[in-house]
Amino acid sequence: MIPGLVVLAPMAGITDIVFRRLCRRFGAAIVYSEFLSTDGLVYNTMNQEHKLILADDEHPVAYQLFGARTETFATAARQLATFKPDMIDLNFGCPVKKVVGKNGGAAILKDLELMARIVHEACSAVSLPVTVKMRAGWDHENLVYHDAAHAAVAEGAQAVTLHARTRVDGYETAATWSYITDLKRELKVPVIGNGDVNSPEDAKAMLDQTGCDAVMIGRGALGRPWIFAQINRYLESGELLPEPSIPDRICVAWQHLNDKLADTGHDPGVVRLMRKQLAAYVKGWDGSHALKARLMSAGDPGEIREAFRDYLASHPDLPRIDGDEWIREYVALDFGWLQNPTRLN
Image (cartoon, rainbow, N blue to C red):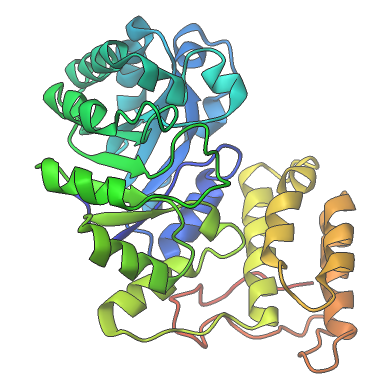
């Protein structure tokens, strides 16, 4: 069911069609949509149409649903099935206040009977595989991942992803991988591990320590979509590919922005939406504070282009970009990148 060992996590405002396709190019085995509200789909109360578009080259791809009312899950699942995803995933792990405040996401772990009914309704509504993603519990006094996972599988879930933190942990504390180990020992369906995988070594360690069937990468892929290629290579051969050069990373960031512009018909608001993602590409660079500030205040692609050009020009040890001269094609590290990436001009 899982065609590889590393998959892209669903992330609100991040895993749109452009980022999903980018991560698939770099070797993500499965990619997940942004969170989709069941109420929004059923009652057409939210602008989610743009989140439903799928591209041929991003399969296998999963839609992820969140909500709190049993009756909306079946209808929403049927709606999504018409777009022909490869699976539908149910969110029982989101810790965000505006989601749990409406009894969605991780809040459902406080009511396992409700969770079981939701899984049952979704599985009964579609012939597609239905999977679930959950946290270990609401807090450490209520670790319910054992019961929750067993209940989900009993109602038809075909795989379980466990983010090895509780809701109250947020993202601040270290993930407890032993939770994943426990679950993998108990379940006959695939178990995907999630939490604190930020490098090839982390991915191998999680697979080795927990026995899980695959690892899920979320924040570790922000500004680093090539992490999937790095992990795949490391798991296959033990080779640790170096981080791409700064010019190569600029190439990927620029391609990401241009793909997003093309996807939205060159909507002028795209640059504002992309600011944080573009800033993630430059994290840790020498002198990146000033570059980040420029990226975070940019209002159009020209400002982004000039910020990158000026950064390269101010670092004589890096290749310069003059006029239409291209940095270089992003194939040097054999990451399977595009043969003709968008030029920085």
